[in-house]
Image (cartoon, rainbow, N blue to C red; front, side, top):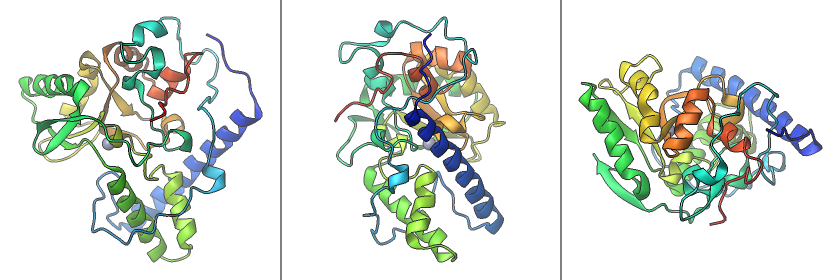
Length: 290
Ligand SMILES: [Zn+2]
């Protein structure tokens, strides 16, 4: 597999990733110590005034494809499925709808406000991308057949809800003092929470919780779901130790539909959707122009 050569853009992206991850770490420590109850994933607190007309700051506006370098030999890609086998009649190869990439570190793949997936009802008020809904139902049914109690805690998240969340997080940080509103917004952007930057807008992501409403790596039902998700075309989207690629803190309950072929490869290797897509020379940026 060809490794992309170092170039200034890659170096710049890597510097930005390092800075963003460092900022995230500082911010998380800050938030935890202050115990404000600001929950990143589940924050749907009272709506705040819509102030998020701020453009993404220049240093976070990364044009072009994601082509982060990965260390040679780090992952064995020799059994990577051929790109043409990943396709379907809608779109061949890595441009397939199943691989729609939303990564908070790269503004070029943020979803547009106008992007609404075609959704079908699943249960308990939650819908999922129509083309993958049967696989989701099968996945949940299989977990329940094992005797587990599992519930959905999130599927689709609209652009406008993301904007409300963005404003709320920035306001919370700003209200604590010591930073300007613009700086607070930058901190939230660096955490990957800009509107359009949440994978839940694809309709292909699902969060699960156990009978206590919890999602932890040690939770038995989530451990079972990690073990079996690929059989139903799902991956653990934000694994531990891969934050530099995903731009997100590890998230035990967040699964993402990519189809069985990709899911089995990704889960077997313990990698991310980003690394999977990077492994293809062609179409390394699968973002579709909507
Ligand atoms: Zn999630």
